[in-house]
Image (cartoon, rainbow, N blue to C red):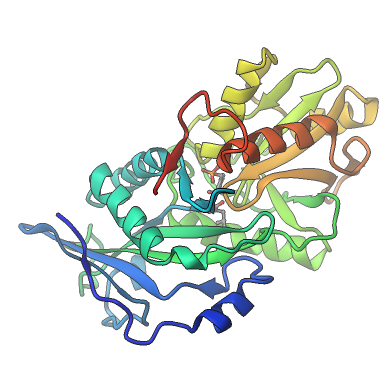
Length: 359
Ligand code: PLP
Ligand code: COI
């Protein structure tokens, strides 16, 4: 299957576009085109196109609007110093999209179609990649249940789409590190639930806690496990790492309640390549506080496609507040961020073949 191309009849003028790319922030500036591809029982995948980005027309009884059968991915296209473009580990996103689809009883999109949809859109809208430092094109593939039916069952029709957003940093620049709210009231995912899938419902479930965090002056929520409310899991949209004085590193294990982040996996691989002692093991919130206060723990950082590698400065809950290390970016955090970004931008050797060059 190939995607038909219907060029936008009136794309944004270059001067207007360049103005929007000066300081795009995150997730507000969108490109001219989008991808759509349909699936229905009996017919499978069909009607793939790249066309002008436009509002959707949906029946109000479309099942996604009622039962949230929806999954998505997040990945970036980079403009390299030589003017060409590249993706970072897009096959990993394709596979995770399939894993999410299975968990949500949705059809799996073949990896080749996923990759083709992304590559076509990037190729067509490549002028939307900002040239500012740290800029990229954030790609958002997603799939929704589109059957018009109010009964609760897996939909018999789906719509897969890809939109693209010109982005700078996820966080407003200025702050040296993010401040976390460790929620005691809410959990994000439970054993047997959907925590390891990238489905919209997980994010909806995180928002009451995120609301509390913002109201109390913090940036992000750190979620604890649902069973004991003791073990650190992840943030609403990022995985988490802990760095110790002895040079070792810990990150929570993939037990099914957290998202298997591609940034997380890349960092684990890079650290192991360097011979750093890394452990995927449970780490308790009380231990984090004790270790930060004793100086045994010297750095913590969050990571993800949108956030890249972001230092964690302060952690607060109803019972405690503590500062991690100096409260700003630590040495390991800065070093690992730089290593990752250098590979993504083809400024350093890519020993694992993670960069997929598009032209
Ligand atoms: N955890 C959650 C809940 C996320 O939404 C994300 C972002 O995609 C991550 C972790 C990090 O995943 P990745 O590194 O693949 O972007
Ligand atoms: C990402 O990092 O791609 C995410 O999905 C996090 C957030 C924007 C939902």
